[in-house]
Every structure is written in C-alpha cells, then in structure tokens.
Length: 346
Image (cartoon, rainbow, N blue to C red):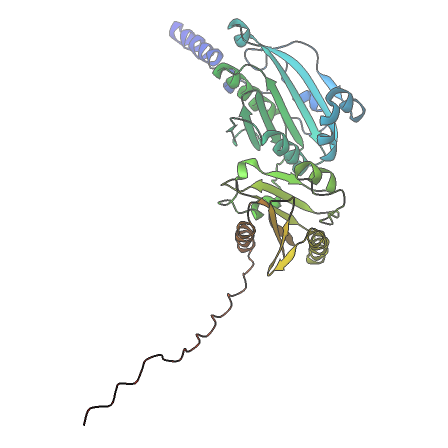
C-alpha cells in the first residue's frame, strides 16, 4: 500500500515538473468573445496575469494601435482581446519579464491567415511551428499564430531561449482554446512552391488588403471584384516577386487581365506572347498573363528576360502551356567561291 502511495506521488511530481505541455486545458471556445481563449492566471506554468483581460472593439482599435489598425480592418476585424502577463522565469533571471497576448477575431479563417501572414512574414530570424494551431512563427520579439477565425500575437522582449520557450508554450495553450477548422486559402497552392519562398507568402482578398501587400496604384488595376483571392511571395532567389490572383470565373479573370493590361500599356508595356511586359517603377520589370480563372505573373524583376522566365514558370505551374518556339529559319545557300581548276597542259 505504501509503495502504491509513493508511486502516486511520483506521478504527480513528474506532471508538475513537465510544465504546461502536459496540463489539462479547458474545453475549446467555439464562438463568442475571444477573451475566453486568453490564458487564465497560472494556466501556463510560469505565466502570471497582471491585469484583467481587455476587450477591443472596432472603435477602440485605432486608439490603441494607430495606423496599424488599418491592417486588421482591411482583413475584416471583428473584435479582439488582450492581456498582460509576467514570465516569472524571465523575472528571476533579471530579463524583461512582461508578455502581452493579443487575440484578434477576423471575419473568416482566410482573413485570419491574411493578418497572420502579413504580420509574421518579416520576422528575423523566424522559426516556424506548423503543428501549433494552423501555423505559428516565433521570432526574437515574440510569436504569431493563426487558427480558425483567430490571429494571435504574443509580444515578448526576452530574447533568451527561456523567453522563446514561454512564447511557444503560450501560443500552444491559446491554440488549444480556439476551436474550428482552419482551411488555408486555396490560392496558395497556385504559387510554385519550389520557385517561391512560401514561408513568407502574403494573402489578399480585396483592394484594401492588396494595397497593404503590394501597392501599385490608386486605381483598381486588377479589377478585384467580390470573390477574388490572391497571394504574393518573393521568389526563392530574391530576384523578383511572384503573384497569383484567382477570380470566381474565367470571365472575371479576363476582365481583371484587361484592366491590368491597360495599366501596363500606360507604363510602356508591350505584348510578348503569352505575356504582357511592363517596366515599373523605372528599372524593374513585371510580366503578367491570364490563364483560366487566374491572372498571374511577377513584379520587381531586374530584367525583362528575368520577368518572362519567371512568368513562364508560373504559367506552367498553373497548367498552362507555352507557345511552341518559332521554327528555325531555313539556312540560305551561299554561292561557292571556289575557282575552277586550270586546264590540263597539252
């Protein structure tokens, strides 16, 4: 009997020492106020709550975030919740111990991914943790997460391994509290994975968030009507930026193509079948094409040849075919310059 009791104490002690990765989480929150997804005081081992959670409405967002509020509004912000915590392990080491957790509820999983991709793509140095939620990225000053309708930001100034580990545990805890499916925007698979840096992709579904991702002009030069979605990513070698816009149907894609072709022509663009080539701004080149429900191509290439080569790879990835090369010109026969042999001597 005494041995059984000792074994029970050992199991309990191991559970305590292993920290929050083994702890029981409350059931996921299916709907409603995302404040319920914030960690309770002590729910993550070593994390203590400083202030009660704060709910953030659309009217309060600009007051708290200033110009940055435009990012969330462009992606369909609904409401948010925020709380401040102390990392007691960082505090014991004399490091900056304060951690801020922000959960933003967006209008759709695709919109949540868009906010996540926009905010996390420039982290240096990034560490990607796809098993956490639908995707998570941890950098030197915190981490980002998206799952279902929610985008989560954990801000921490403790750059030590322990500080990053607390960010990871906090993201993992919040991810367990958020319920719902997390379908990735289908347009993402339309970017060639081997060609593009798909860990740093950006997503848009209207003119407002397209302008955040890659501003071209005040006019809607891609005719981004309702139901479109697009993705932008730098090529893996850093030589250009690839883009794909998926329209609801082929007619809408053709309309978007005509609008974009008109814009390129206004910048001196010229047809180079099956592409349209333009130079903008001065010194960089873009190439665009239309195929089925897609308008795609590249921006910011250093040369026109680079732009057309990348656009050709995008077209092939989408299932399109390049036109056959022109047949070689027939070789012209040149008259012989050889002289006739002299007549034989008698």
